[in-house]
Length: 424
Image (cartoon, rainbow, N blue to C red; front, side):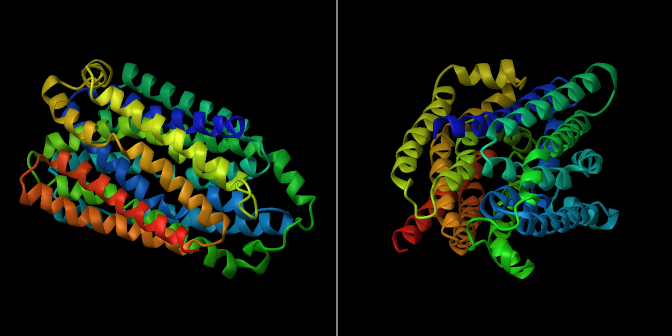
């Protein structure tokens, strides 16, 4: 189990390094406060338009077992990739963009201008992410998790090389440097995934019918959509959290500082939450058709959750916090002061992420995806209720209210799923 999961964990940890690395680069370029804020907003919207494709890895891990299911899910994935790219293009229509960013969210004009350029640079992002997640699911299902980690090494290499070259040789805004690096990284990884998945694809195309007959992909695109729709809706609803919090923080004191600090704090927590996120596909692949490995996976998840939250707490509650935010991330002492309390509030989140991944794996393996969507609706609703209470009612600093609402929403989500699984 550990050997199967470790390459996936390494993959997510390497991806988690992207945020702190790019934040550190942007913080060392001109106008760091505005560019960090724009980078955070652009990334939040790129993640949101990626929502329809984010669960393709889970879908291909669970459903693809022969030539027919491969072709059908591949075509389904291609349609989702095209739709996600079209959605980002729609956001970039000037009239739509101005209404959304300045009218609805209330971004300052300088942040809105920087965000617009960053989103154009991120245009390849959703399709590249969807394509490689589909292929990574095939690799995971075939037991080739090491290749997934190799692809991520190439992604990080492409991302960091692009960022460093643009940092050293070009006079670009930091938000655009960050977006260029992200796009270069995901395109590199998508190309690598295509090449590394060729043997797996050949094996699937040579297999006329898999050993199991219960894959919804055997029943056509309508059955695939019925299986995938709750997962995609889960991602779409869940990924509205960052734009929603961006909207809230833009209207809570102090807006620029909160928007600048939020991506840095989020990146730190993601380093430890990545361990839980990497666990979902591993648990789906290892659970067994009749859940025969549930006890072992549950014990593993318990230890993993405690270790992940313990690691974040070690940074947030010790002098390592100043080292991370000032020395490594490059924040000014003024901005770092806004970051420490939110980081401490987020300490339980990695353990909750492990629990959520395990619960989702149980439900996906059991072909019960609807409760996952309901749990995400609950999470977003709790966040939407708590932020106005903390940020506008009590008068907390915007970023502090945001992370407190985030943790409260996640508690609501895992509590609902625990009941749903217990009643199965």
